[in-house]
Length: 108
Image (cartoon, rainbow, N blue to C red):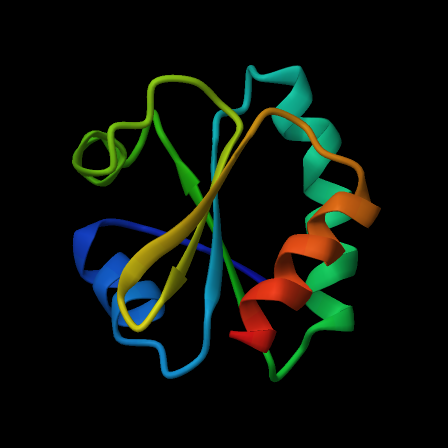
């Protein structure tokens, strides 16, 4: 399941305080590559259930969170581990590429 972030407190609870890594998708409704990535991330959230958390941040509704992490283009994927961003992916990526990065983060 991909958690939709609704504000600063939600981001703090879901992402920054998570015991497991969290992949955060910074997106917007009008962004075609973002919409293409959504089903891929949903599938991955099922495959990595219990190992990695998944969250979405609508940059138009959560401008403070987006600006804190200097999100300049979307989709931007940040992977957080122990409350800190450890990897960044820009633009739409195929599922295979996501898996490679997620497996690397789990192996660290």
